[in-house]
Length: 589
Ligand SMILES: *[C@@H]1O[C@H](CO)[C@@H](O)[C@H](O)[C@H]1NC(C)=O
Ligand SMILES: *[C@@H]1O[C@H](CO)[C@@H](O)[C@H](O)[C@H]1NC(C)=O
Image 1 (cartoon, rainbow, N blue to C red):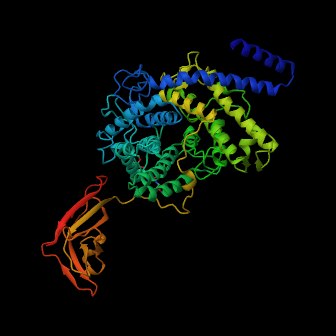
Image 2 (cartoon, helix red, strand yellow):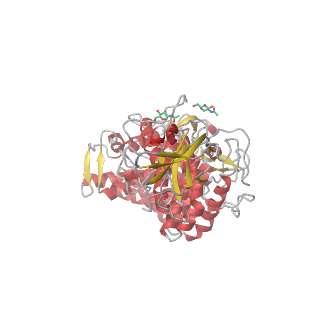
Image 3 (cartoon, helix red, strand yellow):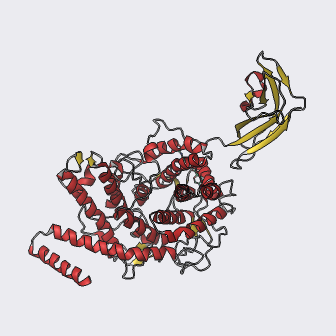
């Protein structure tokens, strides 16, 4: 095979030197090279991921079961920790791969579920489990808290973890193990969704752990998690009230990151940056829904906004020396953001792979829709690839559709070819590669780099994840409300009270939810479980967390006469936020 490619390259470059255009052959030759790279590197990448997961990953001895170590590197830089974000993105890729047929991954996924259930209970510098601890960005590999100073909290972790686990739980439900989904996986998911619904409208550190503000990636991940969490809750018969209430508000806020020509990845901060950041491309691939249209509001990969943004962000890296002389419309090495100075501010493998993946996603979406629309927002993106294209909608049987999709595929493969060019012969993927000579830099064997390769390769092969419900959740309200929702706890009041025909039982008390002692608007209890042996009346109310109040039950008849319970007043304190549903059992007195 090597010789074949060498010969093909030689012929290709001869044609170029002689001035003969041989574009078709060159494209085929390039594709064949990328095909081979994708095939070979896929083996390296899955082995690279598994080598970094405890307890038996070959490069991470000491890591607990289900713990994803960011990189085996222990010095310069020390990445021998587990980040909630990295681990969730890695397991999202593994869960999708498992669902696509790799049965060998099930035990690892179950280990991940157990490890995360445990980590949620570990108090840490971000808080206790109920007071913000889920926003802690990283832990030691033995599952103890990391107590050094750090950019915390990072609120994308709970949202991304919820998504990885929701996709798995949906598979369990579809494959006859609803009990495991409901009893083992849902409790972890519900805590993360609760955290997201309580905290999305607060600032936190971005995925690069540098900026304290509102991060596009975090907010979009939050929206997706709330939407699919709500759907799963419905299937499992579990409550997810805040998911329904908050998801549209998060989507509303997300619209403000759009500048008119690209996505400003960090707002509510004075970061002195343009905001052109791989953050937004990573977002587009994370919220990719194969059943979605090219929706701008959710920044789908094929949406005009996401395509314009792809151009703005990738163009912002053309200043790297290794990108010099590469014309518009041809792939470049991509970093995090142009102002980056970390490790000297170089291109990242995972950012360059994300640039490819967004385009493979877009191709899938156009193909499924059977058309491409070029509008004023996306025109510049498309003109880099097909210079004379005009705005309009092109059906899949048109010549323009064919030339646009061919060009986008070729462009996407170009990003894979950049990664290929700067990947050493053994296929190892570090975190970065030099902007001047392309040599690997920073952490070796970065787990996220390998996972990023696996997802880009899967999309290139037309393998896509399940829908997260985007088509039912892409309408943002016209006016954004924001604000942190009041925390309520579900409390069920059971009152055993024998009543005569025509008499009903109500609850009334000192808080507004209990009609502020006004018997005329007291809250009715239900009697459908009432029997002679057990004359039970009951009602479930959402009450403000940690609130103390006094109350009594009353009996009312149709003519309006009221019988009060005897003194003294009853007293109750609603449990703290996030404590789960409570029950109060009373007997008429
Ligand atoms: C909270 O939400 C409102 C409404 O979307 C938005 O204007 C505000 O910037 C948000 N603040 C934070 C910190 O998320
Ligand atoms: C992050 O910013 C918020 C204001 O938006 C501030 O209250 C908080 O203290 C900041 N956190 C850190 C660690 O600087």
